[in-house]
Image 1: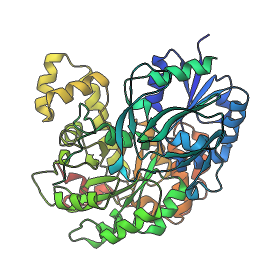
Image 2 (image 1 turned 180 degrees about the vertical axis):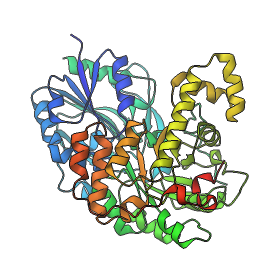
Image 3 (image 1 turned 90 degrees about the horizontal axis):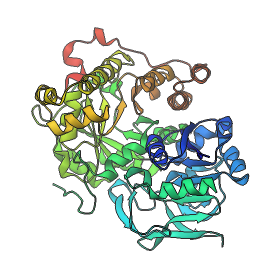
Length: 195
Length: 303
């Protein structure tokens, strides 16, 4: 069976994830409403502005709907803003206060923790499960400040911080695997969705 | 001038992946002009993906006349402190020292903008010399490709700022789309001539012909004032929209801003666009572009 994977398409790098997922053999569709989650094996929550996504999701209660599907076994890949929306705790949550998030990933994240766009950078990461370094683009990236669940497995680090983590059916990265032509992290996710 | 980064790889366009990538993260979103920290907070609260910090919105620049310049650094700093979303700010066309100041202030994007008075009528800023990304205006494909060659990481079609008249924005995105469609249908040997006519490098022209789109993100700007305007631009293939005077020159800025954000996400759903268009109060008072004498048409600045 071809895995069915959705990309949350409220705002952000949607087309880039669609392209990457198709390259891994998944059937891909956009998700903007709770009903569109039906039948999905996995959902990517892309990079973008977490504040904008949280506000767009609120009127249709999309975040709790995603959480419900996650609890029912759907896999979730969160990149950058997606990591923020999947995290149990956001340490500087001022601009997200009062808005639902997915939660479920036992980490504490801080938004824009590296500084302004001038501090955005590229790196090559050793990732658990990949046999050679993965190119990674960090853009106004969040930092995983703390891990609060024993079930969280760190897959990669950069400058001493965890930057790719996994907990059950949640895979999350503070960087953008969708911006390079190396789709191995997407392959891991498509495989996780198929499990 | 500031040096380019050593550790950021450059892509085919000359811009770095982190800089073209930030524009990719803004896609499907609305970037709003703000003149105070309070307006910036309203914009973020409404779901803007970024704010453009400036001293006067284009409608007021038009009304005031005279030379229009980069904003006071204190104003820009106040806006950077007020929000968690990216902050952009405008430098005059060709004014590389204003750009150096904006980079020093750590804005996230510089807009080399025709809305301000040009500082150089021949040269644009050499954007490849900067680490901070630039967005530049364009009215046609050749202009967009020249800006990308100079190092722009993002393009916005110009429209006619400060009018609330969407007709120029429509004209510019239609022009760019149709010029890209023409390139797609050309044989390889015809692309050499096309590059000459577009006054853009052959490699870039060939890439556009192959991909069927610009190599960087393109937003639409200039005259967007309603949710329907924003949705129409998205249906025309824009990656996102800039709204300048359209929000804070309207009767109820917070409601209008949130409505435009929603219409941009659900741009192909008339039910949502209808719903968000209700009860927004007064739109900005418009100016018909056809009534503007040529010297007051901002889109004609830049080349």
